[in-house]
Length: 221
Length: 229
Image (cartoon, rainbow over all chains, first blue to last red):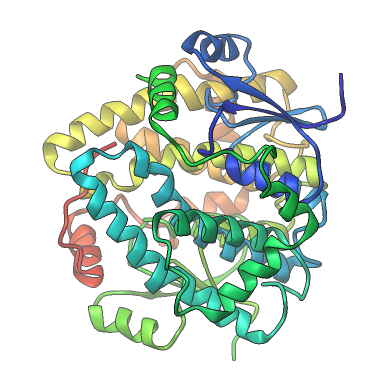
């Protein structure tokens, strides 16, 4: 039994991807179990390991953790990516929650019906350009390398993940955001993140038809 | 400048209610500014008070905090309702995540059509009784303690009581079959700060009505209809 955290989820991004990012950024190796069939999922439920019958599930430090946010907060706290005091933590939480709202739109996008996809894409673009990116562009005008407290934190990891995810849908989205462009370069060059961005890392590709099919098959009500 | 906390939201539950619960449970006094017009909202927006252009917003300790979960975490930590270490905090976060998801089904209930309301009521009761209540029933049964985490009153207890009462408003006997939760409900309700919050005249908001829905739609210019889950 290794000491490594063990992640149980579908073989794709979904709600687990921020966890992969954060562990990778913290330089923590982890194992993954991929759900491929409904039977596997039902067995997990039967074994009582999913507190609310949902994944993500992360086994870490003797706990069977569910609820993505709880998992991420624990990892951030454990690996010193959560600021130095309560106020820095408050800022990190605010930034992360905002970014998560944007990422939520991207999360559900593959599952929207074809006729809604163009409208949804426009919404993502509108929110990114008019609500979220301007906030972080402004924050970074403080001239520091990182969002909070002049130190690398969970908020930086969440933001670089979101920038790259939005760019996959809207390639020129960062034009008009010079601070974010510089931030993206800086973060991408940090050794642990650089490694995660290379082929062969645990980073998952954008969701494709096969992934969507698998998810629907496993979790269909 | 008063040190008092100030909440900016509609005069109704919505996403702010969990914050009112937690502050009340911690015995912390707070002021409220209720959004009634588009102009008020636009003024807040133009003043740069809403980081992501949204409410809830809470002025606390010199910060204009937004994002409900961030606000709740800050209050929980500040008033020692967040466990004694990282692992207890992890448990509290997990439990609160569950009750948050459950209350999420109820959050948009007032905005649904009458027909969708009936469907959603059934969904709420089904989720509560098959996914969420059994999980907390088991936690309480397994350790036999008064509180969910670490034998100490925490944010998780406040949030669970809030969720229980909200589901009961949709189906009054929903706790039958959950003896631990019934006892929990009685215990937590009688904690002095919570008992006070449950009495008339407190800052607890009533079940959202059509007037509330109208206000939210007017202030946020919500022209679109919300669909059930």
